[in-house]
Length: 380
Image 1 (tube, rainbow, N blue to C red):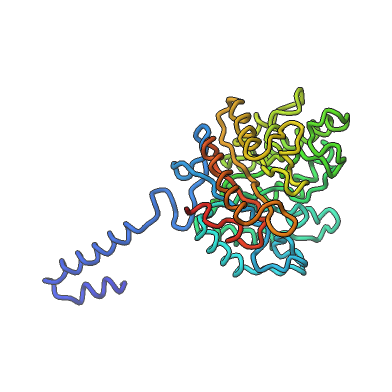
Image 2: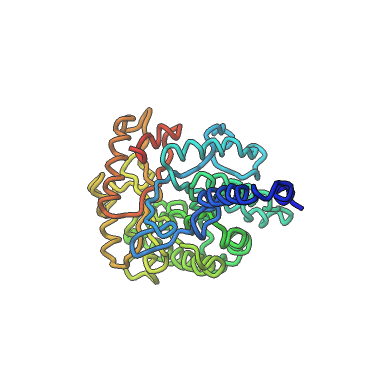
């Protein structure tokens, strides 16, 4: 017998109706506090696509994001990036991450982009067959849970720090078996992810040969076969990720927006592969972070190059959402912008993104603190 049964049976019959009505009212009130139909409390609805819009729970969703590289309290000399407990110099601590999520929520952020290191998440098994990735995966789960509690989605980037000379067909099995399949299988169908970002800047071939800093450099013969090789690799990734997690959206973050349809006459167009477009925008500071203003294809500077990049994707008439997954401007010693310039230009960049009907932006943290980076951009 429950306490409720005992209490009711112990009362005079004249009071039974009153007790029942009180309890019923409590049940009804509690029911009104529950999550919306189809959504479990603390669980984010899946992100879907409606034409050129991203949707969350059926409502239009604007990404207001930050690239989350490391916790705010990190000693960058020892831990420049999240290692999810795999590096003894970077012990895993959830409390600082939870505090960061609180601050990001207060700043209006609803998405963080997180890089999943190839070696941390499986790649180390190539040299150490005894390496286990259960702990990094558990820590990733904890990060996703902390973000979800604050209504913040995760945009995970696969294959971060992947070897830049391993895009050949004979390299596919290693990348899939060591990293992609274990990670995607672990998270397939689970809530909290915005999409899969399949690879970061595959179109920037500078680590292989500086002349291919843009794979569309037709002046150097190596760049076209490099582009085709990487296009095939990303297509392979997309197909396998979709097989493992069929209801999750996919994208790939390109250094230059035009490379969704360049090089001309390549084996395929990335624009036809992914569910939505993602690209990075930096103007000419620092010199090696994208260089739209110094690019032979763009070259008009900010914000004209940003607008052109968006317009050309829209002109493909594929009716897909567009996300700027890295956007940032350095400040401080040696930089071209002051803190006031940063606030002005981030507002301009966000307004351009909105005017062009994109699905939002994800800021790159050139600044030392989240408040210095985000400010009131997403709350004013």
